[in-house]
Image (cartoon, rainbow, N blue to C red; front, side, top):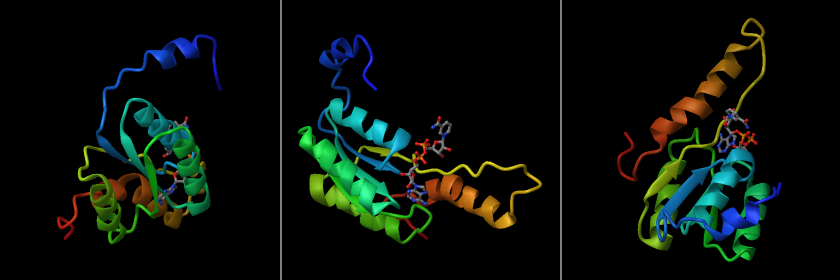
Length: 141
Ligand SMILES: NC(=O)c1ccc[n+]([C@@H]2O[C@H](COP(=O)([O-])OP(=O)(O)OC[C@H]3O[C@@H](n4cnc5c(N)ncnc54)[C@H](O)[C@@H]3O)[C@@H](O)[C@H]2O)c1
């Protein structure tokens, strides 16, 4: 949502990541899409990834229509074999990778007594294990 004074801020955006290349996981919506847009505003080229292909492609189209350099790859961050493809896609397209925003996450709101072990493991897999899989191509065990 636009707020009073936004135009002033937008006209004074610092290009702190000019020409850098960033990957933002879970970038189809929420905090991830906001992070992707801010990185674009500050000069970066951004590869968005998300489990949700339809929303991810919509986000890519929206940011591209604003004149930004944005790509999208469908990805489940909990799947280690998908990581080299994603990181290679950014490097293959723009020749470098400078920033990785491990944003994709879930929150299953529940009393701890009621949370199934399956959902406990799922939460840790997305929010925690995925950060470990997010390594450079060739470095996966
Ligand atoms: N929004 C908040 O105020 C807030 C506050 C504290 C923490 N968080 C945490 O920050 C993270 C992002 O929050 P949000 O509000 O933007 O959430 P959100 O649900 O709006 O967006 C999360 C995105 O991550 C994607 N995603 C989920 N699992 C994935 C997977 N396995 N692989 C790839 N993509 C996946 C979803 O498709 C979605 O697009 C979450 O972990 C959330 O719990 C959010």
